[in-house]
Image (tube, each protein chain N blue to C red):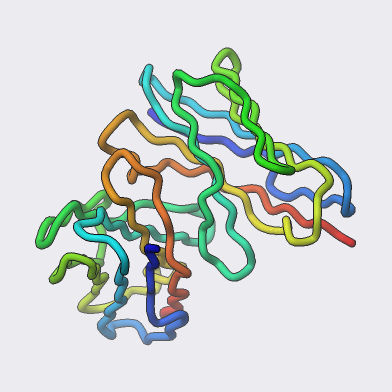
Length: 112
Length: 116
């Protein structure tokens, strides 16, 4: 069966520091991968999605970037964190663009 | 523009009561998908159901049932004989037609507390 892993589970970082959140999926190949953010007062919002290695689409302009260096690996990064980057980050996968998403356990990021 | 409204911010019930979570959506698309997800205190989003716009049949899965009505643009979720384990935040979501179901428009969620 397929499983999705996200780490770390929680992270506290100072403003201006870099960020790297990792997500991997097991038990499937060439999945669609997604990064969502759940921020207080703003609900759940799609940040990035990828339909293949090296293919990244961004949904909203922001301080973050995403990369997909391997088929089942999706990384969310920032060079310099802002206070507004605080939130709960959820990675998700789907076998194709017509299938519902399955989410990981999330990473709670606090920028201080 | 697409929009999902969950007017109930929080609901509190006593175990074994039935509870309905409301969801109203807006879209100009004639073909679309509707979803419900559950977010327990641990944080992950658990997929519950997907409905496409051409299928208005109500669905029942154990204690869960869903009522989709295009005439009122609603996709309500009922839990029968609620249990403490049902306590969670429930999200309704909408996506466009084929090929973009990863781009979900979520409602703000309804926090359900089931007390013993």
